Length: 224
Image (cartoon, rainbow, N blue to C red; front, side, top):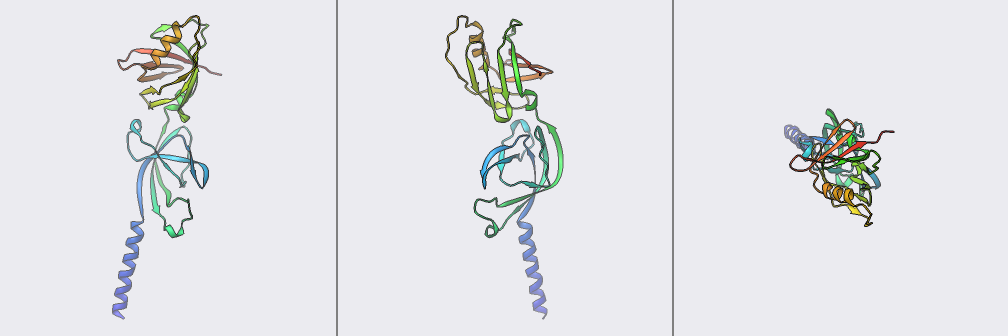
């Protein structure tokens, strides 16, 4: 009888150890925008970063919802989460093998990208102001990493190879190949946009700077 009780205690301890070993708590940031992904069909997934510096974030997709977590587009959220590994035998094919449960929300930060979103009109190239009748738009959709617009002659489209709260680097842009009568501004714009390294949003003005800190492009926000 005594041996049976000892065996039962050992068995319970082993089961408890296994249960504790199957779950853990982690702290990470949730991105302000979800991404298209494929799990059980097409859906949108949360992106998470298990680090501290959002400017250096390397986002990873998670394919399960976080139970108890309220996603708010346009806001980064730092949260503590319990991650529970599920028994593979109980998980259907193509279903996530981890269950996420919110423990607590630690921090909420407005996403810098919301300041960039929308349409901007080019106001200056290399600090030289354009005429008031100039209409050279740039449309920025940072959540999809897309940008498109016109340099006054040709249309362009592309995205960013780097974009955080301070740095901005455009990826090589695809453009049309029209040859206009006056190419002075289009040529200056095409050269300046490849030099952009940092930026600052000051109210309704978007300043873009090169690596030396010189303003190479300036835009004004279109408000409707």
